[in-house]
Length: 86
Image (tube, rainbow, N blue to C red; front, side, top):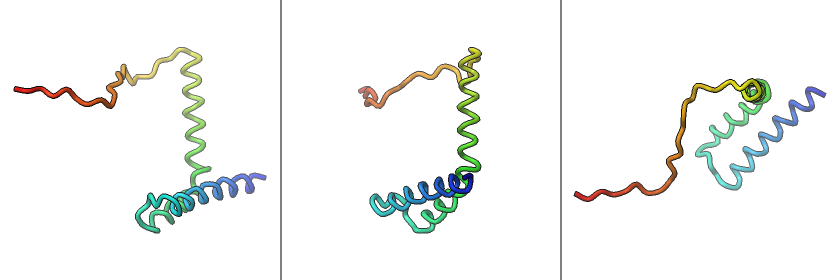
């Protein structure tokens, strides 16, 4: 069952990369596409456990009331900056 889930995850990621290459051509060379397809084998082993770890850490911080040390982040928006004339 573990092998099936692992191979299914690799297959879905590889199909998404191939679909993107066939429709949008986001990547410039087939070397990049091949490298991404190889990284699909490491995704379930490295990326997903990290996502679970940081999600659980965030929930723990939320439940215990612990604050992150990112500080205050104000939105700046996408509007045009005011032009000053001299």
